[in-house]
Image 1 (cartoon, rainbow, N blue to C red):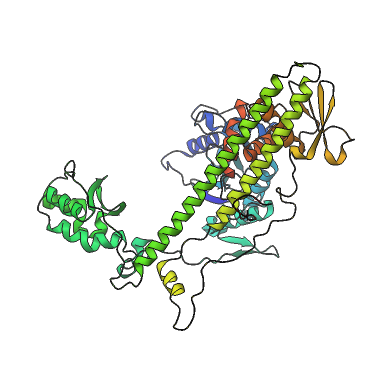
Image 2 (cartoon, one colour; image 1 turned 135 degrees about the vertical axis):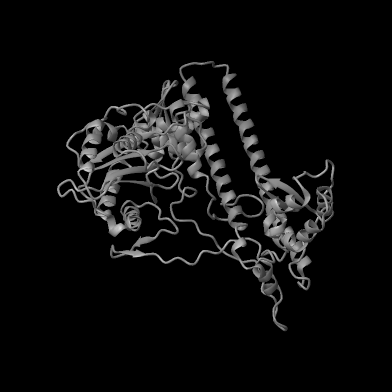
Length: 574
């Protein structure tokens, strides 16, 4: 989580205007600018419908801000208009501060969505850490960006004493960061890598110590900007060492472009400045020299003129950072070969998996065509035969999809390491005299956690079909005599427990194999589970109102896969 304090954007506005605008924005941003804001909604209704709000509002096509949950503390009235009047009255009674209103934003990571209870707990912790418990506060959760965020508006004037509180003696952001650490720890959110505070095992807060930030290339001294980690001369070094002299020697824009093109460089305007391109790498012109920036060159050569049409730029091969760099060409060749093999392996795996999918798809189409041509026609057992065929085909697709996922994970683990930098490569491949070089390739065994999905299927393969005329019941293999987990009735599939993940997944796989696209009907929890499963297993949901939530779930899952066990002998060997 991250926290931000929002300063008053219009300090010239009156206190009344500030309170009214900010309260309207937080509670009902889709009606921001209208008098009175939106009608107040009971907190119980908001809590009950929060999941529906998430799915419906994130799927909306317009780009206006959306508030899906709001609340308030320290007020007598329950309407938004009444709360604004109360806050204004209390704020005006403070004679020591012209603007006792503070505005903070708490933002969760991509894919994280707090529940109503977690929102209320977060507000409790935040107010407590700032020393503002009992103060008036209006807050609202917005989902108009990729990151869900909570706006909190606080009146620092105490309701009884009328004293204006300065949280943490004026260092309120420090207290806000402590509150964020407490919220992350209490609710299990992923901690920010450079968060200021962390909660220790004994529950105490400790300020985190971070290593010094690695300075950017333009912050480094010139002596340290000379070479790239690959040992090649950096583009900035070339522009400063060679390009600057060519720019200074030019007597016209045409000559400048021709001189640079002959050395594999070009000069191009960018906004109010200019760039020096060294091959395909751009360098700010002023980095080559103060007299190489666009204003300085224009003062000398006149207004900027682009390069003549058809001017050919010479190819420029990488150069070693030092003239005496040993074995640098050998390093370049080996590095290029490494990344060439990496790309070739990825492409080979992609083509093989595409071919396997197409082969399975063609086989499934042929099996369905054979069923349709069955001379027995659509008798009483038509739906049963169709359902069982779809279940078997869905299981085969699940096996193939699972195998492809592990193969991609294994390939990712195999090529995870980057090729070493030039200095490391030289040190490893050139040992002291009399000592054999140590091979850089490592032999390792990558384990799989017990109960992983690849070892214990929890999809349609875990169910058995039992035919009752036109109806087909699907029961868990371990309890085939019990009640059915879901039933195929031909035109619909009924699920006994919409919260049982294996049953819902198996039913979705069956529906996808039978109909391709389909819609789900049920309560908010069931639909949310269907969205997660559809994103994880590549299924298509036909519900228009769920498309936004489905896209968001797929984005959250778009992360590199972890290591898996290794296929052997050119094929998959579990």
